[in-house]
Image 1 (cartoon, rainbow, N blue to C red):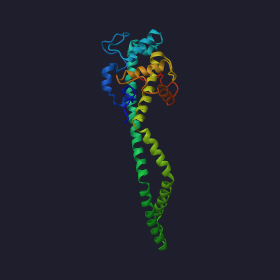
Image 2: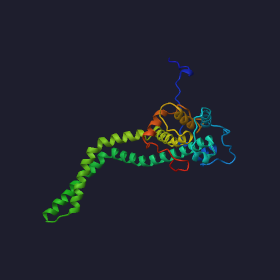
Image 3: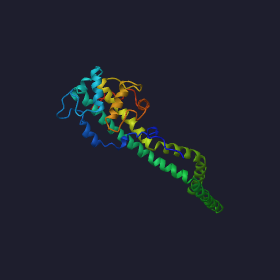
Image 4: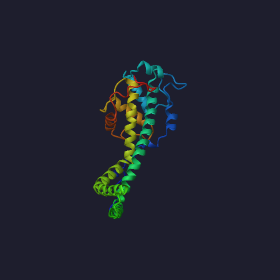
Length: 267
């Protein structure tokens, strides 16, 4: 009789934090900085209490003298790097939520349509062929009488083309449905959200350091991880391949498009 493996040898599957369940209301209450200005009661330059991972990382950047604000950013936030970082995180979450919603709105009907075509391919062809035959019979009958029905002729042609295209498209329909279905699951949702979140953090990093983001391990990647871990106690540094997430976000951005001010103006 087989014995159970000791509990410490049983592999435990890691539960990855799902950011799509995060509400902006809860985040706003937590971060406090939801407008491009210092909240009431804040002292510029003093680390807020309670502090979050992004605050701790800003403190490290300040210690290393890696912070460099433009005059416009300084005037907006009173030179408070903590407020700048928190505002950037808040904006990034809002942007990620919106991009995820748009992706879902576009992809859901496409997946549904492909599924219908895949599941009903034989049925549709079974309908098209006899229908085309009946239309063709009508055309042959009116030709004998000396009439011309151009609209019915167009219908017959359209039915023929539809039948031929449906046969040709069947392998592609099945392949596309499989691909999009895989990308429409939980991991797809999270990857779209994370990539959008990272992309929106490009501007926050520019406000803090006046430097462009890089996908390689370094200060910006640590800023992304600190921002991510500030969203929830459940968020962990290894929830994603951050190098790939940053690379993907950079590839979907125009060079320097993050060079904007907190109020949306270009620098």
